Length: 369
Image (cartoon, rainbow, N blue to C red; front, side, top):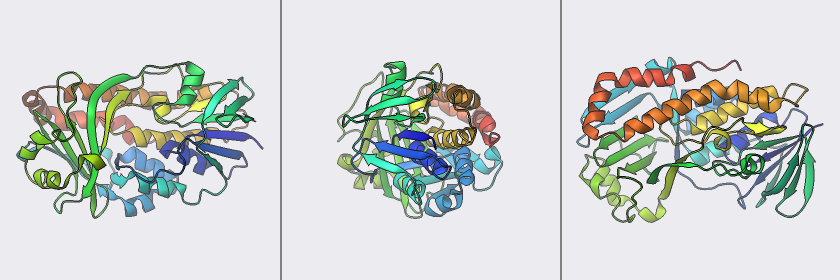
């Protein structure tokens, strides 16, 4: 029986725990929070993420509890259609994408997680590793040896820092706002309203809820008082003014967008990094959750082999093409998002569908699972 430590109880950590819990290993999962996350906003899961959930046997329940997304609409502030994307055509499958509440997805992954020892309010102090095992000192001072460490502890990963040192993140955008609303009756697609003042995105995440993501355009990294942040968007078409009449900045989530530079590998020796700990990037391709689920499926398969001495190099090689492609395309979209609105509008009308199709083409074909 091999001993595995999973660091982090987010989407990536719970997904890999669920996939390997009945494979004859002793599994311990540590989470820095005092309990499972009970809040959060929404998540848009492109089709490759849903394929990963299907592989885990969870796609149907996720579709039932979330909201299937078949189209992306990009509109002007006055509601005029700029780009209408048929996602079934782009992904070449029915009901390809999903909007879902993060907590709901987390709960779906947690359901039937019954063969994992979980320790809350726990982090790693130090680790000592070689090709055979890793010795961990936990935050309570106790130590333990493991055959494998899976670092699923997010963009600010302590696991990554302990094996690679501090890796400075690149700041991309300041002060984006996320919140949950009652779903407007006529919003059933991924719906982006974009103008010179910024972007207001509405994504249905259930029959009665939607997720809003708002990014106000500024020069440099200027920030605003949260009470006036939404002022330009009040001039946008319905349903945005009505949404903002009910909006409360105090109950919204505010953060900056940051990117993790490429790592030399997705771990070291018998320490593997997955999810944002390995390839965190801003959400221009909306691939954070999808790639994390893919990581879990691929790593689970690799762990079926007896020899784990080269597990990190094999996992890195298996994941490199899809992650590198996503990073390159994500950075391309980042540059486009900073263009003046009138230029972006022309580009979207002329080559928007072509570019969107090219962006996701390599991800539309699942890897050999």
